[in-house]
Amino acid sequence: MDRVIIFDTTLRDGEQSPGASMNVAEKLHLAVQLEKLGADVIEAGFPAASPGDFEAVRAISQKVDNIQVAGLARTSKGDIDAAWGAIKEATNPRIHTFIATSDIHLEHKLRMSRDEVVQTAIESVKYAKAFTDNVEFSAEDASRSDWDYLCRVFEAVIEAGATTINIPDTVGYAMPGEFGELVAYVHEHTPNINKAVISVHCHNDLGLATANSFAGVNSGARQVEVTMNGIGERAGNTSLEEIAMTIQTRGGLLNLKTGINTKEIFPTSRLVSMVSGIVVQPNKAVVGANAFAHEAGIHQDGVLKNRMTYEIMDPEMIGLSSNRLVLGKHSGRHAFRDKLKSLGYDFNSEEIDRLFVKFKELADKRKEIFNEDVEALVGEEILRIPDIYQLRYLNVVSGTVTVPTATVRLLVKDEEHQSAEFGVGPIDAVFNTIAKLTKTNSKLVRFAVNSITGGMDAQGEVTVRLQEDGLVALGKGTDPDIITASAKAYINGLNRLEHLKENPAKNMDDINL
Ligand code: KIV
Ligand code: ZN
Image (tube, rainbow, N blue to C red; front, top):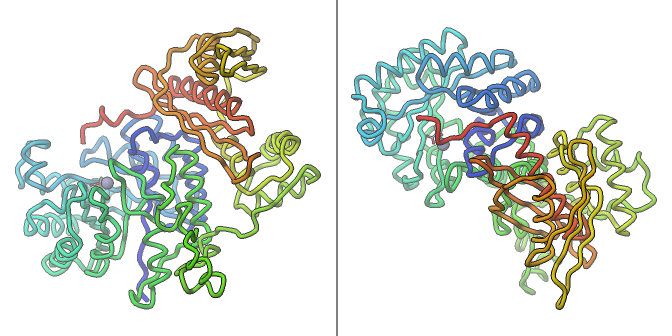
């Protein structure tokens, strides 16, 4: 069987999803999880984009060992220097440099001739090659480029030393048959193609990213660029889980394999959703909440008799455990630590202590604690940053005849402050009071509440997205009381906004691609 290289770009293209920016600690957690998942390469970021990106890529390069770490760079010496500076400590670093090759981009964006682009691409690959042998070159908007010109560019960059050549369908425009033919054309008409791995990188604007990637693989591509949950610019990228599980399920037909440990798919999907704030749609292939739910009576009957009737994958294969009931009020630290381990989380003892206190508080309120509850606690720990604002007390009055009023006491930079405000509803009253106490002026651009498990006493998980002065931050809070969960989420969002002000993440609008 042929091995397909899985190049994960959740931390780079995935992070280009609107509002998905992650901080360094979150990126590190995710990089470690992607290593555990068995991805071959992670694109850790775009180091020239911002000091925050540079630091994150460097921290990841220092942390992981069993995975290649790629840094993205435009075809400029400055970008390549930044990429190398950030990845040079990785065990196996890769410089990924790119320039557009379609006439649309050449005329309207780059304002360069075809010859100039070829020359620039050659010089950049040679420049990158002086740092490392592992150089990938991408022809942005390849699917809308002239095929012969594309082959000319690829021949030149392979000659200059590129070891992987990537064919992106940057705008998700290609159709599977057409994209397969393009990859086959590159294969046949690039004389030195045997010196490089062909890669495909597809966007999902027409919902064809996975189909296009497979069309590319059928024509000889042996690297697929993907993101977990398919997150990414606009409609996203090819989903890692769809590629990995299709190869796993239909490997016999395809004669292909990957190095993905499929049991880590679900934990990775949860982590990505947690840190990016992008909720997985329920009907999402492989990792959606309904992917293994059987609603129709005939289906339920069939599955009970034999799962094969309506299930093509075993849920346990993607790491969905059937053992959901886990802990209770009397569970000790040891059982709690073991449960964290079985869910795939490796925390140090200080982190476990903090989580255990929260677990006990929760266990006092709820009889049964499910895996999802433990994961919500983990999510709060991962999203934790040094808190400037902390909730000390909350009292809310609301009802059919009462004006909703909230009284909130907050610790603001080590000093307690208390105030009360009205609102159109209890949550509005809470947010108004918190905004007054923190003297902040952020705009609430998203509010979502989810039930973590089934049941009347389920915990509510609130996600907010806050915007202030062009910065966007995600906040999360969980509690059996959804008003308290909302207060926690809002405060978490404000803390993250403060953190962002001190460590500005990149603003993709400022980057001239
Ligand atoms: O979509 C695209 O073309 C890209 C390149 C930078 C590979 O993300
Ligand atoms: Zn892309």
